[in-house]
Length: 535
Image (cartoon, rainbow, N blue to C red; front, side, top):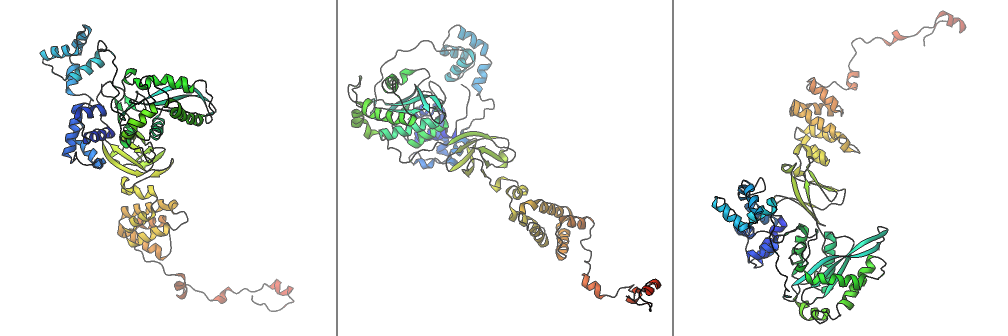
């Protein structure tokens, strides 16, 4: 089994079980990790200030981040030194496995050669690198029912075809069957999918049916619940772990292809398929589900069970109903868990919406958790950003995540832009406001950026002087400011107004009489002969 990083939800699950008073071995079994791993995380949590006798509200994101930072080992290749030492002896180990030597014997022979490694590491190495398999199989024995109200076994079973109006065709429908171990009381949830959302919806309906939550669920290895199956340390999906935390139960997954690990629910699959579904005609999934709940309550619950020789519903009501955890008061919304990359635009995409992340994480993979209210971004167990959830197509950007010189442009922040201009002088700030005085001000932001560039290039003093002179004559043009600064004409005196120039006598003024016109001779004849007159 390759080395993997323990997820944040798994760390929280370990600490939650440890705070409940369970031993390290039991915590390791529930969390799907090694007992030594649990010890390292609990020691780190105590060092970080966790009080075992305190409440679970101590398990904040900040505390979990400190614990992960203190425990995370440095394994660049994903393997420890013990595994690397076994790699050098691989040919010899393969030869020993071929001679049917046990892992214990192989460990003894390696120790004689000076290679001492943990037994579990050697066992994993033999399984993964040499094709070793444990010999023999134990006998199957009948397991006691246990304490009432504690265990519930669940399993998916294929029922048949059912018409789906949304798809316009018949589809395969599955039944998620819940069976109480002690009383054999059962519940059936029908679904077209086997996703985490479908499993959670079935669990929520089951808790309403039982009016409480069982403390231990024993499922099969459905991918919605188990990310990586293992006989000893199964790895659960973070979505299923968080749901278990929210409802207060723990998960004890059955082994792969081992129906004997959950025989109570395995035996009821045939009963549900043959007694409830076979031969029936259902309108749609809603009709089938309503009839399934009635069947569980009035038929399956009130039959005389062949093993306990009693009615499961009555045994449940007498012995198990009061031992269950309280039923949920509010519905559970399944969060989204994705691993996303922080792109060059400082954003990640979660649920078809964009959320900003700090510049330091550009190009790196971060873990995102999104529920109905918040989106949280994690990197190596540390909470790096929290945003309010946006609708698909929306965007949430924190100005602190963007470079200061690009924030105003990216967010179309006109006030930030005018403040940046005013920092170069009062006239520059006023000039920027005049440039942005438009019905569509963001279309003129580039002109303000050019003005800021001129101020940086030629200095704040000349730029402020040039803007002041342009404001005096009401000329709003960045190109004119650039020309003034380029030719250093910002200090040239401003020409006098036209009215003042008219009051000053012209140097070459002529007498208006010089512009009189005299009629030609031929015009005087036409007019009747007279002296020439002026017009």
